[in-house]
Image 1 (cartoon, rainbow, N blue to C red):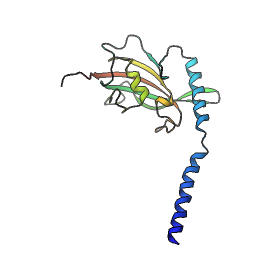
Image 2: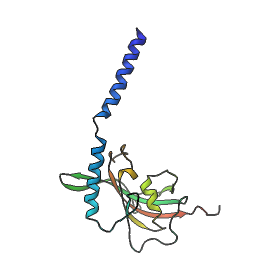
Image 3: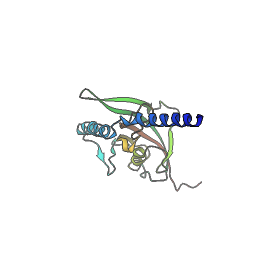
Image 4: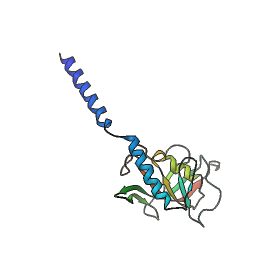
Amino acid sequence: MKKVLKGMVFLAATIGIFSCSKGIDYEKMRKEELAILDDYISSHDEFEKTASGLYYYNEPGTGLGDTIKLGDQVQIFYATWALISAEDSLLVDETSGYLDGHRYEPYKFTVGAGTSISGLEEAMQYMQPGTRSHLVINSELAYGQNGSGSVGMFQTILMEVEVYKVIPIDYPE
């Protein structure tokens, strides 16, 4: 009898877990995100679009040296905002602010290693040391259907990034 009760409790819990996510319309959320993204991009013609759907704009007069390559280690300062819509107007909600020296240590990662969001890693390949760039990264290239921290499910993020330092992959040790 105890085994039957344990089995029933397990079954009820399993059904409860799966039914919680059943009411979420992921396709609708993704379409809403893309509509918000289209609205934002339509009023910002300075961005270039990559094949993956990343939008970027490098500020003129920034960036010196060779373009960053896959395998290079980069150190960046950045600020991030979530792009949201509220009653027919676009809002940006700041989720972090580590640009202009607001953070003591730069964020470090290896380009192409999969240790950062894929849109940011891709953007590095269009930048050089000292580049200041503005990025629009859709959820497929950011946090997807899961979100992260204050970035919700299927939210496009905006980033302002400054490349502080690059350690090339072929740098002698």
